[in-house]
Structure formats: C-alpha cells, structure tokens
Image (cartoon, rainbow, N blue to C red; front, side):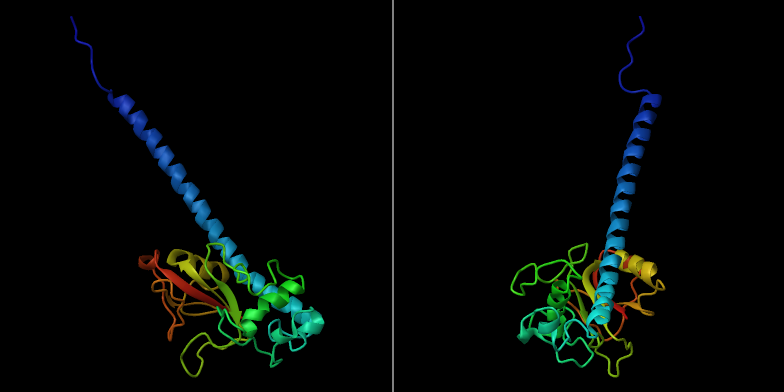
Length: 217
C-alpha cells in the first residue's frame, strides 16, 4: 500500500511564494506612494510661503513680518511690527521676537494662511508634512562671507530625510542639492538645526540622514 505523502508539493510552495511576492510588492508600492505624497506635500509647503509673501505684498505693499504698520494693516499688536527695511530679518526657525517669527502672525491675520495667531501657542510655528520645522528669512542662510547664495528671502525646513531632499530638489529645481534655487545646508546632529558654511551634496548613501533644506526666492 502506497504511503500517504506528507508536506507540500513544489506547486503548492510555488503558489505560496507568488502570493508572498505579491504581498511584498503591494507593501513596497504602498510605501512608495506614501513617500511620494510626503515629497509633494513638503514641496507644496515650501511653495505656499512664497505665495503668502507675494499676496501680502500685493495687498499691503509691505513684507509680512517686516511690515512696520502691520498693526494697521492686519490688526496685529504694534509691538510685533517690523522695521520696514524690505527684509524679513531673523533666523528662519526663530522662536523669539524677530520679523521671521512674527511673519506667521501677519500672514494669518491677513487670512492668507491658516493657524493660530497666538505667538505663545505651542502650535504657532508651522511644521512641514513630515513634522519638521518650517520657516522663512531674508537673512543669509550660509555662514560664508560674502554670501555665495544671495536672494530676496529663503524658505527653509528641517528634519527632511536625504531621499526626500533629493526628490524635492528634483521636483522644484535642478536635482543637485549644492546648486540652483534648492540647496541642502547640512545634516542635523541630534535634532539640532544646522546652518552650514557649505552646501551639502546629498547622495543615495545619505537617504536616512535628516537635513535642513532651503529654497531661494
């Protein structure tokens, strides 16, 4: 009498492997879509700040944050007026009484951007689509003197993974993180926001590293 065969046949094993492959492919494709959405959203976050600035200028003939009569234009506190020198002064990620900090209050009170106008609120400073800080400044973002990358203002964001930084540069600019309007300032060490003396060339080997990127306008 023939003994009953135990275990799986080659056909059954092949079917299982195909199913596993399809599942893994679906997971990887899903992650790819999530990452693409993050890149698109961060790029949109960056572009939106330029839109806020130009809309505010068009309406009030002044820069948000720098507006010396913002209290008249948008009813913000007079102490939060700028000096009117046509530059948004202060670090892009400033958390103190600088024009770059009050920028957000001005554009929100002008109904150009959403978010709280209470500067003491923990949600006051905006975040990009991946949770990193987002801001703007008219001051140089490179410590090199003279400034090798002049612009009217810079939109910057931190906590951006290397692979996202490269994709954002490709989406907005030339795909080279050391040239053009999009540049990487440097890596973040332990969450510290970096302002680099030189611009950083992000390669595939840096995909998991977090970076600060800026866009010149």
